[in-house]
Image (cartoon, rainbow, N blue to C red; front, top):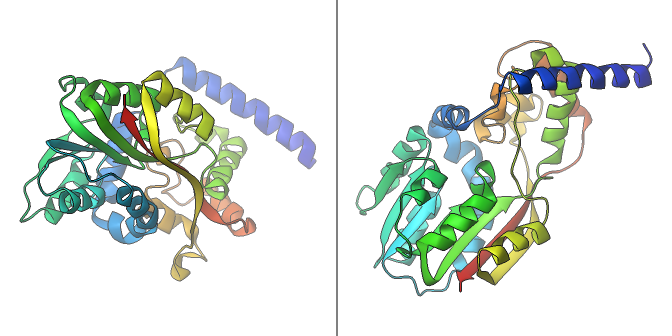
Length: 292
C-alpha cells in the first residue's frame, strides 16, 4: 500500500472509530484527569513543575499588591502558586482548589506552618458554590484549559468583588506541537486502540480569549503571549515516553491510547518523537484582568 493510499485508509478507519466512540459516549472526563494527576503527584514537581515556574513567576510578579480578604487558587496542583501567593499576601486567606486529592496532599506539605484551606473539587463546581462578590483575587496557573475556560471566566466574574482581579496563564490550542502531533498520528495509525475521545478546550488565540473576558465584563490590566521552550532531561532523550508520562503533558489523554504499555502504539509514538526535531514549547497566554 503506497503512502497516500495508507493515509486515506487510516483517515477513514479513524473517522469510523470516532463515530463509534461518540455514539457510545466514550469521552475522557474529570475522573480520568483526577486519576492521572493522582498518579503523577509524587513526582510532578521534579518532572515538570520547575519547567513552568518562570512563566508562573512572571504572572505572579505582575499582580498589583492590593488584595485583601480571600484569595483562591484554581487548579492549584502541588501548591507552587498558592505558596507564592501566601508569601505575597500574608494578610489574605488562601484557598487552594484541585480535583486531584494526590496533588492536594503534595500541596499541603508546602503549608506545614502556614494556614490555608484545601478543597478537593473541580474548579467549576467550586466556583458555582461560592457567593457573589466574595473573593478579592482568583489565580489559576496552567489549569483553566482543562476545564471550560469561558464558563470559568463567567463564574470568576460572578464570584469576584468589584475591582477584583483574575490572574491566569493557559496553554493555547497549538501548544507542545511535537507531542500532540505524534499523539494524533498514533490515533490515525492505530484507530482500533483508541478507547476514548476528548474535546480540548484550550483557547485558539489571544483574540478568542479576549472576547470571553470582555463578555464577562473584565478589563485587562496586564497580558503576555509567548512560547516557553522545554528541554527534556538528557536521560530521557533516547526514550521520551516514560518522561512524558511523568510530566502531566498527557494527563487524561493517556486514557485514550495505551501509551503506558509496551506495544505498537507505544513504539510508534517513540519513533515519531525521535523523527521530529522541533522544539517542545508551551504556547501560552497570560493575563491579569480586573472586574469592572
